[in-house]
Length: 115
Image (cartoon, rainbow, N blue to C red):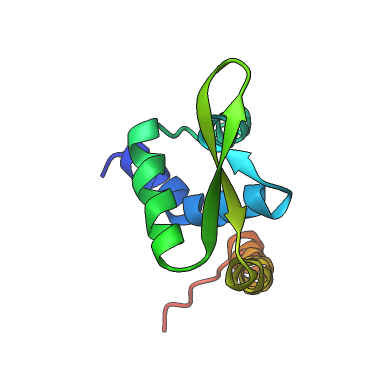
């Protein structure tokens, strides 16, 4: 098994949570979301993020608005919906529980008994 595949799957599994967390802090357009993810070393390409944003919108967790830009075409800003805000609060609790469980498991020395 290749470690890179496993690492990619781990990142992919938390990407939705990361995007919603970014939007929890305020409205953002795709380039800002990508930049925030990349600065945190979450390697994501545009081809991955657009379908995910569409899926989150279709699930009612976010919406968007168009805003004129002084440096080019209008920008699509993504915004958490009320359902999205509730959803991210639940994900925050779940993430905290998951971190605690994983830390407990990975930091505990396992002993094997040969009986």
